[in-house]
Length: 106
Image (spheres, helix red, strand yellow):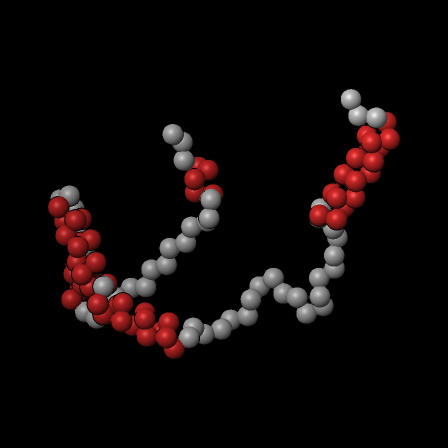
């Protein structure tokens, strides 16, 4: 067993350790903002998007429409018009880091 002085020393040290590494209250700087300012994307990223739209998107959308047609669903005429043009829709998909795993049930 630990002696009472050793136990007391460990108790003091554990309190000091939790204070040194635990959360503390701090004020945010006066110019701190939670919402970032609107800004444009870089020229390289813009070129990447342009290239991807030209090289990848047409085939991906055509494959998708063919898969839908195989199910027997008739696509509206405007979908065919989109696939024949160079003006493709922009679609964004976002997911959270680990939250998606939490809602799955095995």
